[in-house]
Each structure stands twice: as C-alpha cells, then as structure tokens.
Image 1 (tube, rainbow, N blue to C red):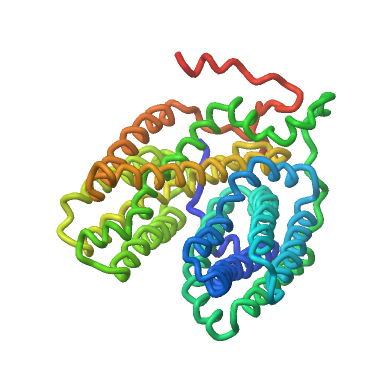
Image 2: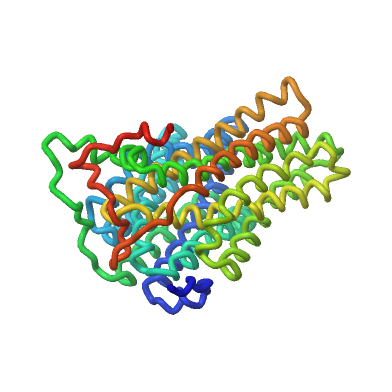
Length: 431
C-alpha cells in the first residue's frame, strides 16, 4: 500500500532558493502595483476633478486581464519563462516611468495603464507555469498557498500603505517607486532563477496552427473533463463575490457608514487567508481534493443567512466564514495546474484567470442590478442559494472523477497534444 501524502509545510518551500527569489519578486511587485493604483486614482482625480474618471482609471487596472489572459498567456509556453518574466518587468518599468512624467495627457495615462496590465498577463502565466517545476511533488500545494497568501496580504498592505506613501511623496514620485519595484523584480528573476529552455510541445505543430497556439487554452480545457470541472469550481467565486459589490449599500441598510463597509469588505479576505492556512497546514492534499465539493457548497450556502443577521458583527462573521470555505480554490488551482502538461500550462492559466475574473464581474454586476427589485440582504441570500445548488451539482460530478495519474516526471498521463490531435468526443460527458 502506498503511503498517503504528507501535509506540506511552508518551511519545505522556503528552503528552495529559487522559490525564495520568485516569492520575493512577487511580494515587491504586488505591493508596487497597489501603490500605483492609489497613485493613479489620486493623480487623475487631482487633474480632472472627476470621480467617475478616477474610478474608470482604477477599473482599467483590472479589465485588460480579460483580454490579456486568453490572448497573451501563450507566450509563457513559447519562450523561456525566466527571460519572459524579466522582459515583462522591464517593459512595465518603462511604461510606468512614462506615466510618472508630470503633465502626461490623461488619454495617454489611460493607454499606458492598459498596456501595463496587458504585459502583466504573460508574466503571471509564466510564473504560474514555472512554479510546479520549482516546487516539486507535495511541496507544490504549500508553494501555491504562499503565492496566494502573498497576493492577498500584499494587496491589503499595499492599499493600507499606498495612501500614506502617495501623501508623503506625491503621485508622480509614487509611480517612480512602482517602476523601481518592477526593476528589482526583474533583477531577482533574472539572477535568482535557474536558466531553463522554453517548454517543448509533445509533437510538431501542424501547418496553420498559429491561431490554435494563441487560443489553445480553450481547446485544452474543452478536451479534458477534469479541467472543465476545476475551471467550473473557480467560476463558483462569481456567486459568493457578489457580497463585495454590495458591501456599501448593505452597510447603509444596517445604519453603518463607510467604516462598516470597510469591515464587511475585509471579512471575506481575512477568512480566505485563515482557510488557506488551515488547508495548507492541517489537510493532506488528497483529502483537500475530496473536500472541494463540500467547501464550495458551504462558501455559498452560508450567505443564505445574511437576511436574518442581527447586525454588522454577525454579518462579518458570516462573510468571514464564506471566505474561510472559499479556500477550496487553493487545492483546486493546484490540481488544475498539475493536470496540464508543462508545455501548455501558460495558456491554461491565462484562460482560467480570465474566466474567474469574468465570473466575479458578472456576479457583482448582476447582483447590483437585482437590488432594483429586491432588498440587498435577500439578493445576497439568493446568490448564495443558487451558488450552493450549482456547487452541489459540481460536487456530485467531481466525486465520480477518477484520481489524476502522472508519470515519473509528474506530467499527466494520457494528455493528448492539443495542437496535433483532435479533441475527444465530449458526448460521453452528457450520458
């Protein structure tokens, strides 16, 4: 009998020098990104006196991923990933430095913001694809947890410190600091990671396959039932994310002001951080995969209690519990990456990232529209109920999914070359 995988520890990944460099580069760039968002919002508002334009500029730091994810992430499968990450960082350094020039027209600022975020997509895809080759085997889940925790905590710290830094230095100087973080990230990546050749596909690409190289992520997922289910689990976030878009109006219904909305917004990510720590420290990887369905259901179902909450403190507890259960996304993301051949991991990550962003955006938008016909607490409860039902169906299908099988190198066994082979017949999934 084979021994069950042990629970991975953070100490197991921080002893890896390459991971330490990758993590430090991420930490620096995440903090710099949040600083830049605050600085841009202040800069645009100061020059335009338009809250709408300031909000639009902030939105432009988020939306390009919807295009860049599917359309540019293939670069992480075409070029050496270390070099691609360093080049992306240096390009972002130059773009942000131009943004920091006093008197830059607002239209040019907006265009540069879009460009910076588009360049971020292949960088993130390369980092995600490189991680399983740096943290091998059981250590990958712990490494993935550290990356996700760093993103969450880096955003919170960046926003918290961003206002103070912008107030002390001014928007232009704060943008120059952001440019410096990208430069430092490029140096850490270039000299801290080992040189690896570009990923090689399992077979030659047929003639006329250039477009399929770009859109191959969709074909990759469409051809693999396991990947489709894991991506669907990621889209569940669209249901429980609705509460974040309604936090401010919900706080008003409770007689609370902006401070109350802030507490509500902080509850879910705080719960998510706690959930990631629990899963990483005390739940074995195989057990975590079995809990995907129940945790997904719970992350949505707990929101059904929102209308009967007695006050903001109870609601914060409910929303924190939703965030706690949403930590199922951690093993789901790790399993998704490990179920994809290394040569196509970049495309797959880009598609998954974009699909999650679309699901969350759609959920928040639809929830906002629904408040025109129903009270905010009931809208949140309704989204929770639909999300729980959807997650229940996914849980049933996931329970019937056989375990992933990998060869001695960790590559998925039987994964077809999506550039040279036809997708399998998907009609069997409907039986």
